[in-house]
Length: 128
Image 1 (cartoon, rainbow, N blue to C red):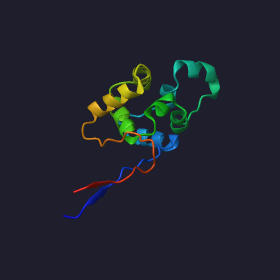
Image 2 (cartoon, rainbow, N blue to C red):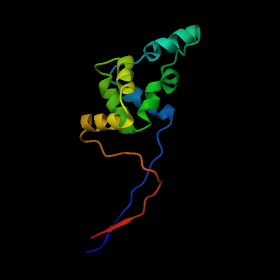
Image 3 (tube, rainbow, N blue to C red):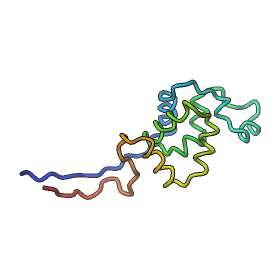
Image 4 (cartoon, rainbow, N blue to C red):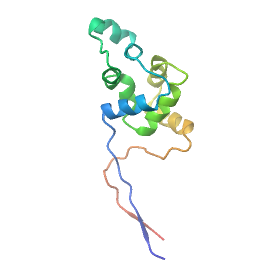
């Protein structure tokens, strides 16, 4: 048999813009800029709040908490069918990153394991 080399690679997180676009695309309901402003940001922003959903979402804490990982974004989009952005964000704030990762994985059984790694290209392992 021919030996097979297996490599592990690390992809950079998605940009905030790309993550926001993916969340908008995957969410089955419409998000609006008003929903994306939490109470503190809404009070501070006043009339200067962004009217554009993409702009508001790019700046939103939810995008930062999802870490630019497509599986996390897909999970959030599914959750947003039945909950508000504020409620989802409150849930994520209560979780440690490891708890969030376990929750996403448990709710996304068919999702590939996309855990962040520390190096961009791990050493190959020989099998066979």
